[in-house]
Every structure is written in C-alpha cells, then in structure tokens.
Image 1 (cartoon, rainbow, N blue to C red):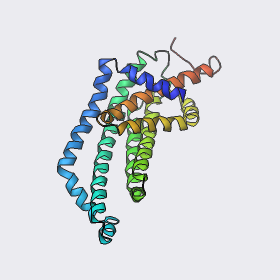
Image 2 (cartoon, rainbow, N blue to C red):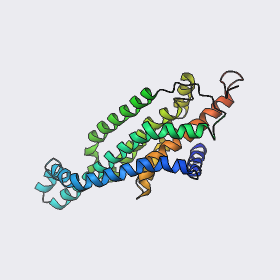
Image 3 (tube, rainbow, N blue to C red):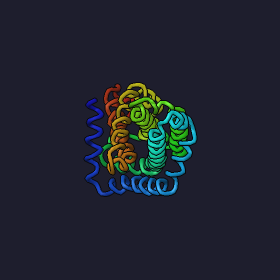
Length: 245
C-alpha cells in the first residue's frame, strides 16, 4: 500500500510541470467532447432500445414502468460513460503514455536503463486487446446491474481491470527485460489491480474523472518504474544493469 501511495503522490507532484498538464488534458478534452456528442445524439435512442429489452420489459409488465425507465436511462448514461472512458484510455495508452514515459525517463528515472523492447505495435495490440475484452465483459455483466449495489461495483471492477491490463504492461515494456517483467507482473499483480481501482474511483468524481485515464497512465508509469528500480537494487551486482555506463 505504501508503494501505491508513493506512486499517487508522485503522480500529483508531476502535475507541477506544464508539459504533463498538456498530456493529461488531451484525453480529458476528447472524453468530454465524446460524452457530450453521445449524450445529445444517442442517449434517447439508447434508452429506448434498453426499454424494449428484458428485464426492462418485465418491469413494465409488472407495473414498474417508472423503474424500467429509470434503469434504461441510467444504463444509457453508464454505457456512454464507458465508451468515453474506453476511448480516453486507448488514447492515453497509445499516445499519451509514451510521451509521459519519455518525460519521466529523462527526469525522475534517469538511472533506469531501457532493457525491454520498446514496441509501439506490441503496446498498441495490448491496449486494443484489453479494450475488446473490456467491452465483452461489460456486455456479459449487464444482468448483474439489477442486483442492488452491483451497478456501481461491477463498472468499478471492470475499469480497475482495464487500467491494470492496459497501463501496467505499457509502462514497463521499454525498460523491463522479459525476466524482469515476469517477476514484476507476478509480484505486483494485486497492487497493480488496487492502483487501477484507485484510478477507477477517481473516474467517478465529477469533472476530475475526465482526467482519470491520463492520470492512470502517469500513476502506472511511476509505480512501474519505481518497482523496477527496487527490483534491480535487490538483484546481485551485475545481474541487471541499473544504468548506462
């Protein structure tokens, strides 16, 4: 937990840099514009489609039309929010994270040698694969939203998983060697998910939530590189290089 708090503290400390703010605001602006566009042109249609499907039709047949309408509009908003968050996450992972990684590698983590494979294609495929699985899991878990409380818990867990799956690998692919990545992914599997959950909670804060995807990318870079630094410090001298000669 202390490592997560350190990563979050460093994340917000990085916002003192104007360049970082530019990186963070770009996905947020895209998410805001997409949310507005989908709400204006698609929310009503989406709510109507949900009203025509079970279990909304069942609720209407039971005389609970008001509840069916409420759940349909709520489902529409959640779907729009999920799409906007997903697009912002892809933008943050594919475009923004490499820029953040380059900035932090040249400032706070200059001691870490880049021993991984900095593959744009591999990182992009990882992000797209995570996005497709996220959409599939979102659709499959829709029936669970009818259970009181799960309509909030399920989206949070899905977003936490998306953050971990997308940003953990991308943050370390350029610096960590294959063996190092295997050790870190196994050792920090739980903390990675917990960090993803923290950023998913941030995504539900009004206005501030628009910054969540880029802030998640920044937090995972800090957490991942600091974990890699400590792993190399634990290793025997010469086993892993911690810097260039």
